[in-house]
Length: 273
Image (spheres, rainbow, N blue to C red):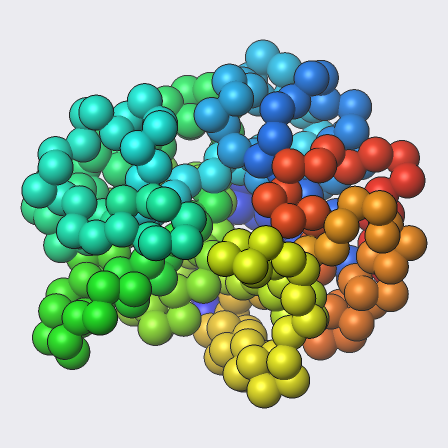
């Protein structure tokens, strides 16, 4: 599938064409960037105030985390969001689920959320909580309405930022609709995951892994590189290279982090298999 080109998107495509791209997903506070300097792509939770234009290493492609399907009541933007847009709650993580069909949501996404990140120097977005609407138990018609709204919001984001790298976390039902508006698909827990409800690391059942690998094949058929984020305790860093090797053997870019992606990579945290 052909994709629009820009310096940022072309650089990302070149990185993803490497045998094992060096990517990091880090949602903690950043005290300097030395721990992230070895990575080509860094997905950052921007709520800690990190501004790539001021602090980031030029050689790293910095992407900002956006929870497109949910919003936490603790974030500053929560007070600015119309309450009628909040149509449910994620009982495990606590986020309020956003009505993707709300007429003003795409503009809010661009103007209030994405634009400040772009001005801060982020050159792309990692769209998380893509599947939150599935928690609502909607009938097929209402579910399709949410999918159309989510596709419209991402289309508005792409139109506003044609040069930005956009990665979605899951959203398997939307891949064909999104077309060349996104640059990669990510998902979590191919071999090892984190169970927030039980507060423990878990092994992924073989049938769940087989289903995810089928989704990965479908994404690659759409021309999208695929990323898997697995989880293990920081003290088990010696188990990361073999785990990354298993993921990479499927033609999937691996990253392995701690349960909430809050432990900054260190010299002992492996970069690859």
